[in-house]
Image 1: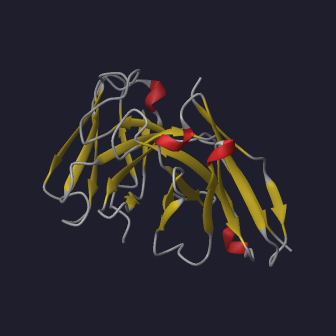
Image 2 (image 1 turned 120 degrees about the vertical axis):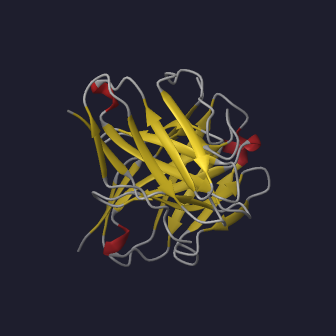
Length: 120
Length: 110
């Protein structure tokens, strides 16, 4: 079965660092780009950025550039989203998704989401 | 990059049709035939319903259809069913491997 499995929910304090993961299985992980999407509580979807797992090339939405880092380790079929200093405004659900697995330039296989709560 | 504009809500009775619009610019929706639509139930991950404006992934009912004219794309759900009650988001490729989502539309089945 083709799937993306994300790491579990996290509760962190402002200023702490964090890395969440997205592990692909059932397909050739390096073949398809991964995207990250934020959904703040009660709000809509926001595209954050992409990574090509084959060479770790990344690009970011201007809204997220400099605030998060996207990376990947193709040897373990895992993509990451990390923060060096969390803020309360980072509280949200974060999803990873493949791009173009069965489509073209669409987000077709989604992870289950990782809820991040940042509170003092 | 600004979010694509969708109506906050849409509704219809069972069996009727509902159409959701998604308005962007010539830099995204109007510039590429790479508009996709996602269905999201509360507390669940989004699901791809339409890609490349009007293509359906395997398993998506043919009640769901997409179209585009100029800078506006549309999703139509025909023969509305109770299970179609969900949030729907459009998304568009915006060039240089950038993407943008719509503001989202809550569909209510009356």
